[in-house]
Image 1 (cartoon, rainbow, N blue to C red):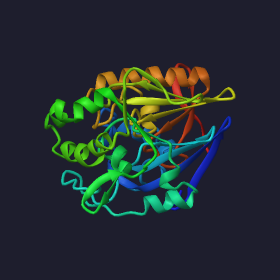
Image 2 (cartoon, one colour):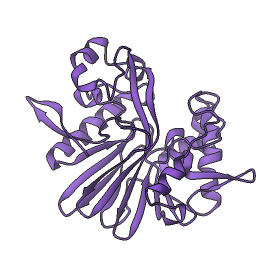
Image 3 (cartoon, rainbow, N blue to C red):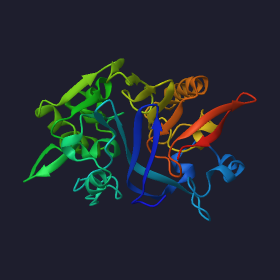
Length: 300
């Protein structure tokens, strides 16, 4: 899928659009999912190359993207990528990045003033960056009419009360101050915990492990279902081996338990699984065969 393409599919009465901010080879696969050894990646090579692992190298392929949901007269964004002009010295890929994300969004028919709800599945820097814009040296909400739904546990952990993530990653303070705090100051933040109904089609649920407040967004319309899982998954290898957490998970064991629970329900409900960073089709139907999760069908 080329950067400029907009993938779309429909779940019941809800149109789902995929807006890509960036995609390409990232870190070595073994660094991204350290619990999966080289033999795991080679065993499943046919399912992972080229969309999720670069041919001829050991690097995982990832995508930075936003999912747009349009239905019931509302426009909902799920995660908002890295953003432009951010000070991210801890991550060269994100540091002072400049891209055309808002242009891509507008070419897909979504203007900033059209957005009703922004869902941040968690508060890592590649999920909140386009929450805000630099307006004459001041960070302000990029979507002036939107409610921004922030998981309470992450808002505490990454905010000043939690010491900006305990100072483990210096960028966390920068992320909160330029991409989350301005939404609070504008009165557009809705901090939720446990479960939160967005509208008749959408429900947010806590899914901790990757971060304390990581969440999934469940979509159900006319008996069709999808679950937007954020960073519960970074690579399809984690569906095939759900015990393997990413290097970015703050609590890998809890993340693995959450992953199994959410995947089991997705199988039972035939829900499309929609992660934040998959390349290729971006979303996949998961089945179980001989007690193991399998990749059944890609969206689009």
